Length: 427
Image 1 (tube, rainbow, N blue to C red):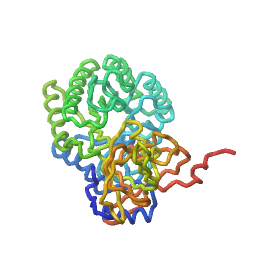
Image 2 (cartoon, rainbow, N blue to C red):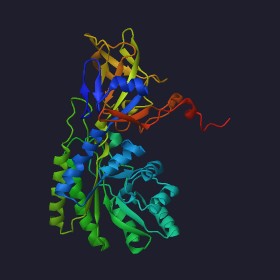
Image 3 (cartoon, rainbow, N blue to C red):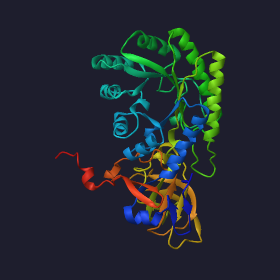
Image 4 (tube, one colour):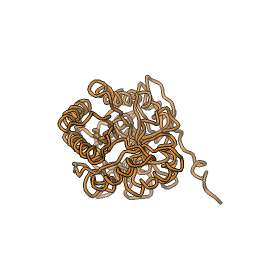
């Protein structure tokens, strides 16, 4: 769960060769910190394995996990594409050096303007439903530019993860059954307003088991073989989604990425041989596993408060507006306290934020050295779904984000100000 450059010392930590204390002094708190070395290493876990075992592949970075133009430029330099789920994410990617032809636009309710933007920039649209396909046909026809489409299919594979992040089971809001998709695909194949590029399936997020990834590959290949016969049309690409889990605490065992990718490519080759179909382009979506442990969040501790016959609280200067995941998913994290005079005593604490909600909690039951006001709290594994889910609740100014590498730091996102909060208000 730690950045690969992390160094933990009694009175200070270092990330990317930078002192945590100096980062706090320079940029303030709350502060998102991204370690460039970890980000690149995680990209290479996928790209190197695929280059060795299945070079006809694209790795699509999960924009929704954590995206800025600067992060997009780093993943582009590591030869990754991206998956996006909104016009805002797509627009951000288009401002970066990511190749639009390696971008995949997901989502179950894309607007007309979002579809228009995707088609104009040769971005592949992952079709979710019949209503959306009608939009694509109308817009592509009007633009006189064929859309590139994949179809999202629901494999009916259940996985052991939180119910809110399961996506491949039978009652998911995402995707189509094969029977629902076939007539829609036939419309595409029969027309000149779109190009059918392949099929996609995604079974969920934060998956720690290795077996489901091979299951979805086998299912996609078998489905592709059926579709090739029914449509009399090639299936050139198989997007097997992702959902690779990461370690948030010492009790987690994250899957071995190179081993899983190697297993998936061998399964793909064997399955294609069994079904006598050509080897397709493989698209992998790593999800949070690229950015998750590359990020940490720094807070300044305020009051340390004991409630009679209740919890011991540590209050920090952020909370649910910069990390809502404990409230949403009961997500666990690993915490450290950085103190000029580390305490020899420990306590069991509830870590709470500054927002006007009783549920504004980042963790409960965490054993830590007893901190003092103005000590620094560091939370590991916050690269994914913290900045991207942050809000202005209580008119909170969103934190800055900095990139650290080889002892230097630079701003990726400026800290918001009160002026930013009222910028769009009308009197």
